Image 1 (spheres, rainbow, N blue to C red):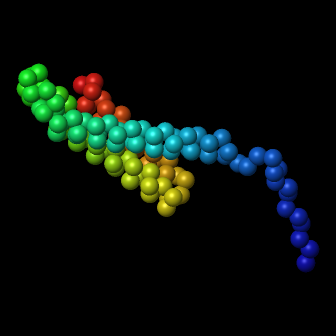
Image 2 (image 1 turned 30 degrees about the vertical axis):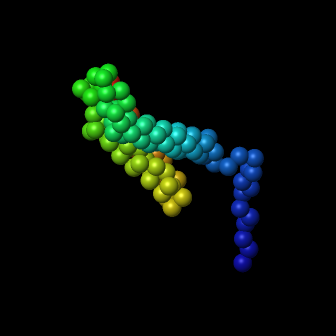
Length: 117
């Protein structure tokens, strides 16, 4: 029995290389944004705890500030985003991109609700 050789595959560029770079870029942005939201949430929670003691006669005790709900919402979404980033090595490329997009949407939603609403 005689077999025919397979056609040659060009080795200069693997298929879907541009999409892989775009997917990695989305994952990197999602990781940076979620880390920034964790930092912002920690700062807001710390300020929420110490704001009345900063300047007792300044009226900060009666100021509303970001409120506990907004500070904890930002911290919670940031931590959830970081958990998604840490779980990344255990996923294939398709779910990783969708999880990164979900992180970006959640971060955008919480920032809009807490700062621009």
